[in-house]
Image 1 (tube, one colour):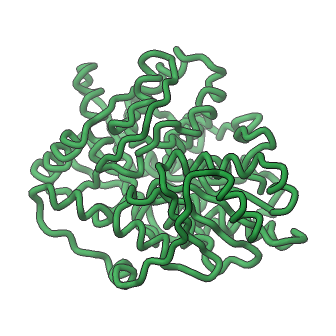
Image 2: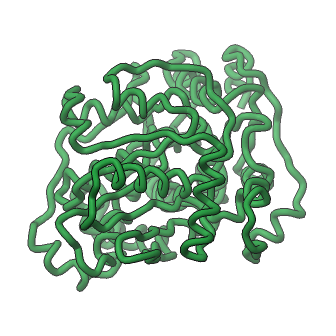
Length: 415
């Protein structure tokens, strides 16, 4: 409920629970909801009674996470079947229902601050829309999200407010973090976060890694999972799944031109640089918050991190080439972020001359959300899902603010 610790740091589990090995032998007998409950209950224990926790999971995860096969070794885990067509729906919907459950015991309204580079904002807006006792303020970088993404996060109204920041995603994230450690704000306003800086966003993201494993037919001894990486929340959830016992051989982290994490893996040094706008905009992050969690999970051992994670970065031109290749070879339309994941998997397999493997590419969003980029690729026209057609014609409603904290602080204190 607090989101961040008082010193601005992230909460991490004191102990990562493990699952009974017998589960993996019989995992095909479990439904997605049952698997999700087993995982969540290990972290939440008795904080939420079992029946209520299962009810929350059923209500939040009311859509599938299908595994689509491209060839004998390559699979796509489609995480865009939720209401906002992005993987963030898993975390946002679970978090919203958990927070609503606990908010009923608070003596004042809960205010959620969330920074977004694209899909988080719309997922949080949808997940928290009309949730009792909660207001949400979404900070997004002006001109750095797709047109459809912007419509998704600025057209809800009621308890959802969109703040258009004159800066980058990292500027938005900095404003949120500064608000959490500001004594004046914390004294007067009941705050929490809905980014992946909040641990309750990561727990439900663990669910679908197990669901992917369940759907693999061979479940070979060489399972590779390729994750398009920006703020590293999705990758961190996967690493938690591995620590819980999920038999994943290697995680592959694909980045765009904002390659801070790729360079960290290669050099062991974190060198923050200016954020670059790319076709894979949800990954336009140059100071990934969840890197602190990854370092903590591995006890600051860079060699241990490298044993589990390989990373490679790709330019906008390479992203387009990847999208084109996937369409021409497999007749599958992949979004720019998925293209990064596909290329990273391909790089790792080629560099290491791996023949026998099952490679799962995490497809984080429906390609229709990036129609501007799709137009650059010679593929068939995308059909717009019905639940987006209405949003396209709605009027954008946002409040424009600078990236200066004092201006943001005045706004927050006047809520």
